[in-house]
Length: 236
Image (cartoon, rainbow, N blue to C red; front, side, top):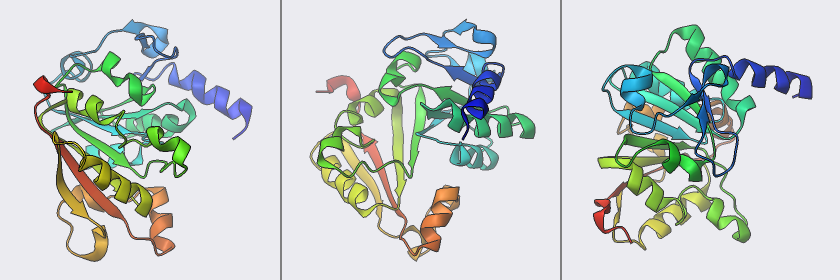
């Protein structure tokens, strides 16, 4: 992508009413359309979406394909795609506007900063679809199911909320199960080593992204793990 094209997309994001951005690492400052500062922590549903429906996040959403698919098939929830790259979320945000998907928004920030923008218990569910597996040993803490992230998810999810991981990477799949098993407050609610090896347990698992189609064409198995958490009042 050319620098000019990126700059054009960044400028467009500044005008989109369904995009919120955090530009300063560690600073809990969020801006919306026109660069206006906003504070939606604890009130995304009421203040932005204008309803009281559950809130579902997709982390490292890229172009937002899964966020859009979830929203098209789930009329009972609000959906937010989260990614640090503005050029990535541009496509999803634009598509949501073109299709009139008013229950879709996008947040540009780092995932480790989510607690600045969402209150404890505000999120009903989290999807992580085909994230970078960060296979090298020195990258372990960047994996989205590594120990630095699990307490964050536990804090933000409402009681009964789950983290859904969908991946083609056998290493990340095995790592997620091994890591979850180390913590008594993490529950492995589902473990499917081959999503398409039998009947789908839920329709949302059948949504295909661009990269998933490539993985399937290459003969790779798609794996799924669902994690739940005990209440966080005794979070270590």
